[in-house]
Length: 104
Image 1 (spheres, rainbow, N blue to C red):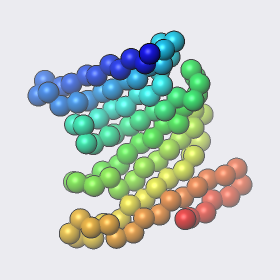
Image 2: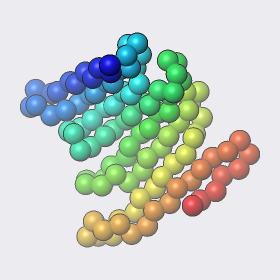
Image 3: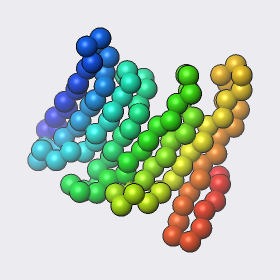
Image 4: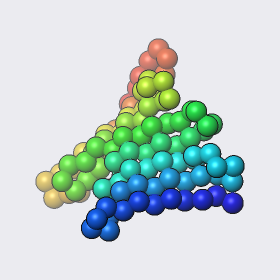
């Protein structure tokens, strides 16, 4: 069965979570600033291959998610825009392929 390790700061706020498969391989490695604010997430597709997601925040909202492949090349990027009241205003996802990029 899978195993999970959690780490908390001195105030009891979640700062790190690692999930392992039944063979002890890391499946997911997440860095938090509290349980509701993910800063970085690696999802492993093989022991040495992963998609690394970086989450960028304004004061309250996740504004950008940038995903990179193991070699550091860009996989995709999501941009979230909000109005002055914190309501979703717009959302764009940019996909990168070897020779092109496009918005959804």
